[in-house]
Length: 329
Image (cartoon, rainbow, N blue to C red):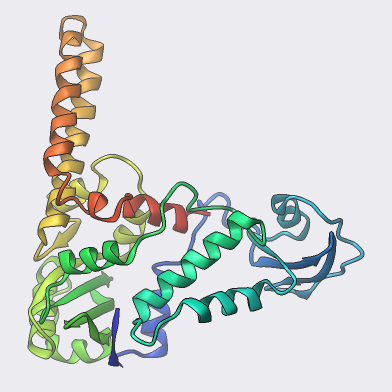
């Protein structure tokens, strides 16, 4: 995914922490004050615990913990939000398998996918167990899927950008420039702010200054996403049909430019939302209920027509559904 001479620039400690905060799992507001925090690592051998560590409180008392127990019960006992258990020597086994499969020509994408495949194998073997299984049912991506997704979002010589605003100011930004098979620049907002000039306080106008700054400093945009940080975070976990389509339509989120796979996904999502609403209306009105089979057929044809270029079809799974699973506590 990255070139050998990738460059990170334009980041401060604050802006980097803000960017990472966007992808931090979150609980609903009513659960946030009391939710479990941190995770538990359990190393076991021959049916006995060897080590037990909480990421927030440190080592835990082995004698006070029954074993074996379901990891959900282990989390409840130690007030943790996740748990990972493995046989003694599991980490060394992962490294040995990785060393046996890695090739000198493998880039970061190939290496990361090899590690994912090894971890999945060991989970199926029972050597490693994780709770909660957030991505259960989502197939691991192949290298070809990742390459197609990158090519669909960002062509060679261009870049992708994310710009989020708060209280009339640029809160954080992310720019990745494509060079050949990977990205050679990962840039933050620190340098871009100096090139944006005076802001009006209305992000729907100011995002254009950010686009100009990105293209002057790095490369033309292949895909850009802009909005307010609170709106973006809410959409990340919004599972309602058409949520992103509505946000783009009313300019709560601005996508500019929009690659074909993203545009098709938004169009299909918006059409599904319209069909769902129309189906509710026809279901309430007796004579119109006869239209339900026709609506179902139209929805199926719509999905198949857009399938070849839709992001979900390229990856083999719905990336937004996977993101929601990862971000929701």
